[in-house]
Amino acid sequence: MTITELFNLLVPVYNDKLTLSTDSNSLIITPDQLIALLTTLKTHHEFALLTLLTAVDQPDHYQMVYQLMSIKSADVVSVHVHVNKSTLKAPSIVSLWSAANVQEREVYDMFGIIFDGHPHLTRILNPDDYTEFPLRKTFILQSVDRQRLS
Amino acid sequence: MELENILVTTVDRALDYCRSYSLWPVTFGLACCAIEMMATGGARYDISRFGYEVFRPSPRQGDLLIIAGTVTHKMAPLVKRLYEQMPSPKYVIAMGSCAMTGGPFVDSYSVLDGVDKIIPVDVYIPGCPPRPEALIEGLLKVKEMLHLAKKDRSDLK
Ligand code: SF4
Image 1: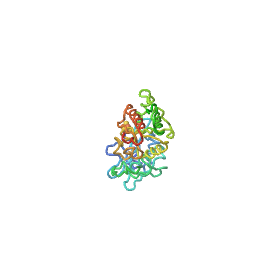
Image 2: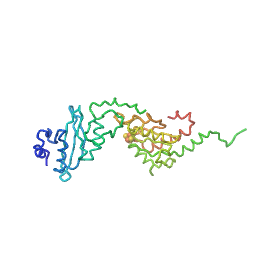
Image 3: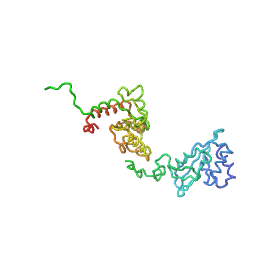
Image 4: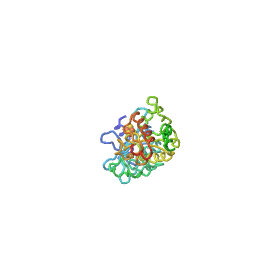
């Protein structure tokens, strides 16, 4: 099944909350419908495997990227959510895939996106007392305090 | 009167002389350089020829800390704690450009620019990674250092 076919199948349910990306390769959903969409994909369309969870710093929003795979057909679908740069809130999908736990922590660590409903949202790769979010485009390397340990 | 067969020394120097032939490194690797450290311990390069093969699983039993790899900001406090847990006298080798200066990762948000920022280093071994021969040379440099009186050791660096 191509992404466009999947989109046509789902669009009557989500109406204008679901859109197709310009390259027709991914579904874009609003944050409030993310859990519902992923649940449908997982239970009714056999996309049971979460292969990737990451974020991209776009000029006017952070883009969450979820990539799901169907073990049966080897199809891959990627779902995007636009996260507002001032509220930084995204829904947590730990209730659907517990593997998302550490991946959401990494996205929090690198981008500062807050996942609503995450059981333990703390830094994972950087030190606990780190104050920067290094994968943001606004991050300035010189702002890291190199002397703080010596 | 001519004195023959009498050696005048201090207890410290005599003990250091003995230590220099059996340094016990702490088993501690941080990144790719640790692979070369393991190769050095293996049959082909065989540091037991020099008496340095007794890698200890606990810092409390080691007297040589080989910093073999990249020290991140997150790891730095633990490296420091390991060093502090070792009994004195203790020696530190910074192996590879990462441990010396941060190496290829120095312009990164997470890497410490040289382990000498947190603990004192006796011998630096440049390379990315240094070959086992270079690590052996570094160990022999520690030996050379131990054969000197304490006040002369800084000249060697
Ligand atoms: S110096 Fe080179 S080989 Fe050694 S840890 Fe750094 S990157 Fe790896």
